[in-house]
Image (cartoon, rainbow, N blue to C red; front, side, top):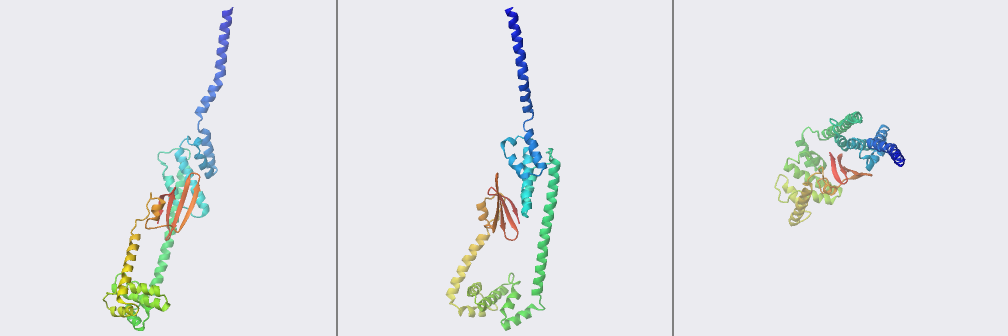
Length: 318
């Protein structure tokens, strides 16, 4: 009797254990199978609704880093977030955005966003190419217009005759305008140009520029107009003082040449290295701070830009 009761109790407990454990085991298996699914659906939902900033912030959280195709989705969301923010500002930095998209290998990636990423990448490249075509077309147009103006200014029936007439009349403004294009390849024209500009500066009351141009004519120079140059210079100060001034100018020009001989900015440089480059410091810095880091756009003259992420150069636009 006792033995029968014991066996009955044993089987009852065994049934309870099996029945009691099965639901928990099923839950554990379900959780293991669905790991990351909820997070991925959340991200895809934000992408579908074009909520790029929130999607990016979530992707930086630890619990979202185990979703399928994490690196590709993060790169795409990051690029779209930058594009949408910069589109609002009216100035889009295409190169950094394209670099982020290019980090996605569309030949191997076959995730749910492949078609969307491919389409956006194509649209962005078309937009970038259109922007640069418009930009360079505008620069060409400006250059052509400037050249027309220069041609109109410097068009002469006989420049030699004009020069002789201007020298006779001591029209130094005219002399300078006639020689400015020849001074880079003709020494006599350069010396006469400097002298003409010194006379123009003197008449305008700018003694500093007058001295600068006269110092640019070596005291030992011997040319067609050297007597005129020397006579004018010695009325101002002695020969020894002119020699000393020339030496100071040579030293100054050497320092300037050394400065401009520095290397231009390069990808991988630090911010301090860019400042020490031939471009020097920027005219303006546009800084954007995100949760994941700092993006900077350094603006230089002549439409030159340097882009930095966390103080490191990633793109250079000239």
